[in-house]
Image (cartoon, rainbow, N blue to C red):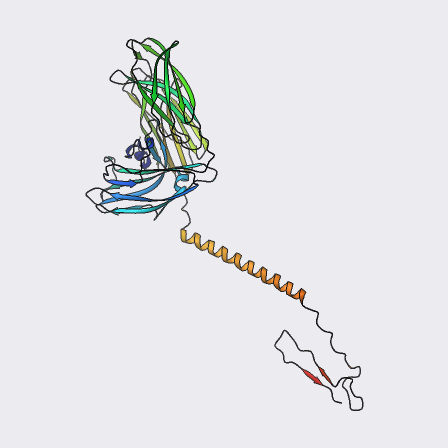
Length: 453
């Protein structure tokens, strides 16, 4: 079966900003190829934020750069993941509009970025991704080192926030030097990013063997991250060992029990080495490759979850009935029936309920309708405002006319009319002169009547 390499799936594996979520980086060190600044920007307390974005060519050749806005996430190790996300693309805008352009040696291009937290949300997480290559070189199956870089935006709006995490798994992974990596998988169940830290108490029976400090790290809402530390167990350790992890800022607690035999932990360990979500002939295609990186055979389960916005659309389990030997890998493929839209796909590998690895990517099916042009939008707003202004002025004029008419005194009564028509010399008039009534509205001449004596 044809296995496409999706643009965003490739991005997730090749973006050269791994680990930036752990530290408050404001600029990329050692500019190579193309640099996006700021590489990481975090702001608190504002519902909107404006800042300049600089794309610089630090190479010794002219490059073609394709700039785009993407959603932002991270894997279990904290490495940033960039994927198509309609909400993020609408909330973070660039001026001039992102696209493809040529950048000369040592040259830069500056964009004005504007971010607005979506209504009903407390935070926004997005990335500005730059893909680059020599002009005229088509994008092939082989990806050159550091051909994609990105700048990340972490925006938290005004308080109150919901800062909450859960410890969903605690485990150990053996290292080559005989030590173990102690990992607490922490899920952010709040509505803003957090950076917890913590410890793991290791006990056998009632005896405290060690307390391991966990490195802190940024966790985005809805994502999991493994906080890790190093532990060297006593030689020839046998029996059950309990690991209890506790985090602070915010607080959470979780535990697990692991069997040791002659100093070795019989724990499963696996890694998702490839995760592709793409569109092939208008239909979705998803594939996941899992590798056993531990020392014991596995019979894992791979769960795929499809979400559209905040709603779960589909969930599918792929249990492995045959054992996966240490060092071996296996690939599952899925073509779910999805309509046009933008989706978030989560791949989760577990063994008897223990979390082995988890990855997230995005998938767009079909073409989204293009937004209205900025000029058209402004013209429409101007027309509507003009109509409203005319209506208001007309209403005010009508009201003033009515009011002025009600305040004017009533017109004088007309002069008496002679009962016998025109006066004659034999019948003198009571008034020597009588003036006729003129038309005060139309432009008609005034008529004066003179009576003869």
